[in-house]
Length: 188
Image 1 (tube, rainbow, N blue to C red):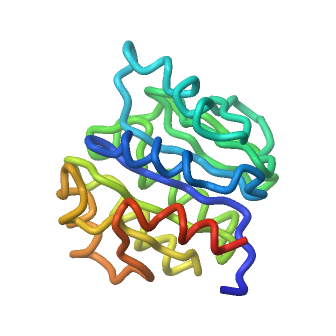
Image 2 (cartoon, one colour):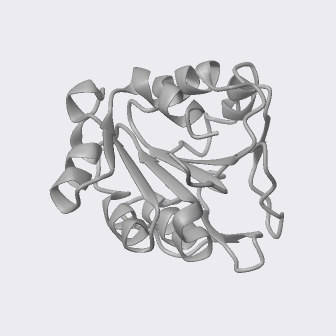
């Protein structure tokens, strides 16, 4: 594939954490593109997510901060209980508006915001989960040129979220969890 990606956004909910941990374990250590993780997290019990990811990658893992620029080689984690937007000047913006699909951060919000800024330079990956968050965002991002990957529902611990995406759009790829890191590694 000859596209150049600037940002890879991975969204997921129930059943996605183990997929993400294995993904980063098998990702190239010097991967030159930024990642953004949008996970439905419990506000009180998930403070160790950055630490867990830090053991599996050489990339710098950190929680998104207001007005921080998107830098290559980082893994940005959306903070619990905030929507995250990307501004035209490639900085993050945190938002505390209403929940979407019962979720904050909303995967839809991040996919849409990232698509407006990065267009064809965006790769969106949707994983396991128990609600429809992410499906509308994938459709929106695909219309703006983003590459869309959805976890194969039969491979997901909780297939509802990828199933909802497949009902709404035809992604560029439907992959099993074990095939995601090799695919992403092949992009650079």
